[in-house]
Image (cartoon, rainbow, N blue to C red; front, side):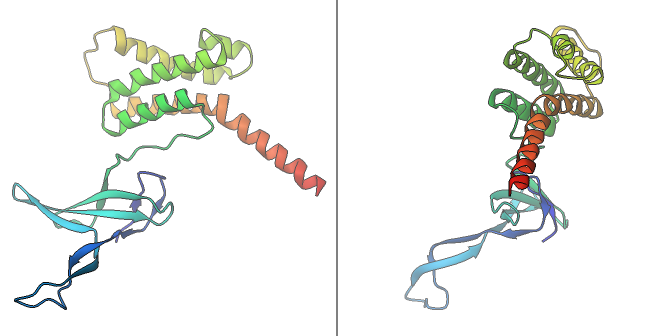
Length: 213
């Protein structure tokens, strides 16, 4: 089976069809006048014909995280596509819960091409971050040294776009490229505030422990 990205762990690896074990007919032991039931094991790949278009669905097992997900292969195609859960970019675990949840939802909106919704949720994530940091605006984060001037300008651009979408009539749709760039800015901000300080502290702690040994 061709490689694809796991929607759960983000690994780009090969996959194995899940093996479903249950009660079924034992074909080798059944006869015309007698059916033998017993434990059977089948591969979880099934063709499905919908309105004349053949699809193949499968329950696959990721060899990296060993989790299950549903994938689809269209007629005459060798390429598989994860369809459940919806594949979207994973969020760093170091980000605090409420903010992490909002950023995950923004990434999920992006994955289903709901770009306006994605940017509106970005604004909610920014507000949650400001509340958690005890500031009323992004400028305060810059002034107290939590973020650089460059990160402040990027984060403020996210805020301005989200406010424009929420309060003004926009003649043209937000493009995928616009949304992707703004999500990158928000991720850089969250990494600077939450992720990198924690990872740096862990490395410093490990270095000290190694020195003691």
